[in-house]
Length: 484
Ligand code: TRP
Image (cartoon, rainbow, N blue to C red):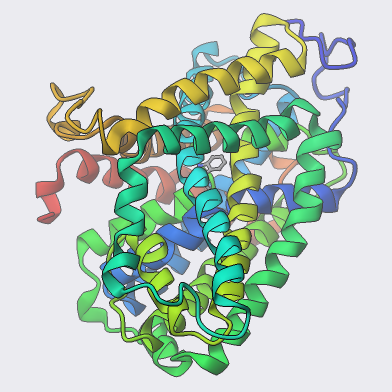
């Protein structure tokens, strides 16, 4: 049995089930923090872009299906492991494995997640830096454009279109912005679970929801709301191809922060009396609602301005500024919009930094603040390489020798290695571990599910999740299987 010191210097040795370490101050705090982790750039940037690229309604419906049948069962599995282990992700898995007389090497599934979370953190904060830039842009714009007219007055369409490419070219600026975003994240992670991570969620998530609803309602009156509803909710099943389905599962997992040890880590701070199935359902429902509302927030603004909804990251950073130009009050809406995105990104980056920080603290027995500073430093270094991926390092392709990642910059490699390999592998191993390896008595009492629902959850974790996720992994590696 491993001895682990927690922050207050006490030991969890001997009986992990018996001891509750310090953690969230309440069930609500946990729910808000977990929603904060889930709701992020994935909902606001990735979801609308993926929906647009994959034909709208059919993608959206299948996405909801994936959240319910695959995402939710794995989310419950991850929080279960964490709460059982009361420790960092790897040690939590190891404890459950040891109690089930299984190999301790199962902890590798969490090790992969710790590394993956760090890699996501590194490029996620670069995007967080872009958000900071746009907050500054629209803040400054209020002084030039005023609060009633549109945003960016006097700028030609070409000049607006040049803002984002010019930013990407400026590696030094991107690195500075990245460092700023990592530093803000660090501030909260270094202060601990109840004293920092939770504060950020409890204050920012309600503010985020208010802004999201406010902007959406404003857009509904001034934008192409009906058109957007049709776009997002018209189910044309002929559009549901293999690659659309895979994009939907991948998006569901990224959005719920699964497969990356994140929910194991957050689950480890949850107290014994919390019903994990109920809270998992609230988390998944909120995350999905935010993705759908984000679609209803962004598409009306874009469609009303007669712009295209295609274009990945450019949808938010390039298309929206054009749309704000013609919108009444565009400078204020633009500012509020990017503040909202910043809040969502920060609650996720805090979660991403907490995973490697919790791991390193227990691994090296170091106090929280210095450990978090070290992780942040490493994230800044890797972030700088990602920031220069659009300029000086655009020809540097770190994994060129692997066909799957050939031709990708540091920024792109971090994203695709985690999304195509780590996420599915982590989630497959988690569902196999919980469904087949862990002893039932360690699991069954904890889910909060009874009777038929419990049986159904077990069926999903044992059969559907590993099968579907293996399919994503194979198709991710060999795209030709589904024809692209
Ligand atoms: N879910 C987050 C978002 O939608 C991003 C994310 C992916 C994440 N994996 C994670 C956050 C792991 C925390 C932990 O933006």
